[in-house]
Image (cartoon, rainbow, N blue to C red):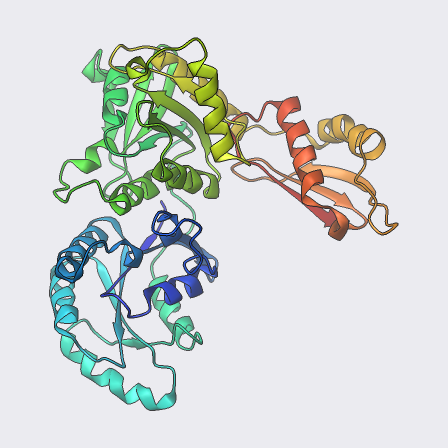
Length: 434
């Protein structure tokens, strides 16, 4: 199951810089829509072959100074509930502050692994200032510099201690997660599907305490729901803050094969829907978009098509995904959702033999549409094969891979999507030298 590491701490201790260093991105500095894209606080990291997700709780503080403390408490509380390891960042230059003590107090009582990280130890002189953090009772502080990276190696060794990389496969059954913003009808969807007869639902406790799989075996369908609906009940904090529902989705997405992303037809596609869609895509999961509450939308002759086009425009470039319009309340088209989800699962696990790939694609990439020549250099593709991974990845062996441009890559991907019906499935194509 996915390992989740959360970074907590008061504002301005350097959480974003540290987050960037772990996930090797610069994304937290760049904000395409100011104050809207919260997606930047989630990233994937890897250390000594172990992969984990990093969540920076920093960018989620909303409101003025008086609400800071309440916000930070909420974030720490949520990190305690959701993460496997909590990194508590403090600032060596400022020393221990009352707010740090407050956070330390919450963390001492929790059962999770907490690692105290003393940031901004940018010079050797600062190393002595780390001593005062021993008083917090959270074990040895790890001195690091988020700016220049010193100390992060030792810290990461500690973070990945005891983590396993490969998910424990629950079974060969497809794992389906229903995700989306609060109140779009996720629980109603699962209840409508499983509600006829409670005994077809057999909860199997997942390997992590909170990803419970619900076996669904009815009408010729057999799979596990990754049951996120049950997670929300104990949550007291107000769920409207984007952070909470994104964090709730992270584990569900990571534990699934295919995600059913539900959006509310009466509200249209919101930024947060796009954030969740981005998470699904970055985790390379299959996806079916379900536009629920379609019964509430004023019907014009053309709304359906227009709405669908609007969605495809906004989720581009990866917009080859099935979109189903439902009304869960009226049980409209909910089995259609299952049928399509099953097709997406099959497409995601589809294996195409090397023989078939080369026979079907080589004529296209060699004769009909070879890569355009750049600076007089002609790229010749010799051979194609599929990698043995959980989702479709293909390698095209050629003489000059560096001259392949994105438009050509997209052209090849689109042809393959049509030929082998990879509808709703992220795929990767690599060009390598033979």
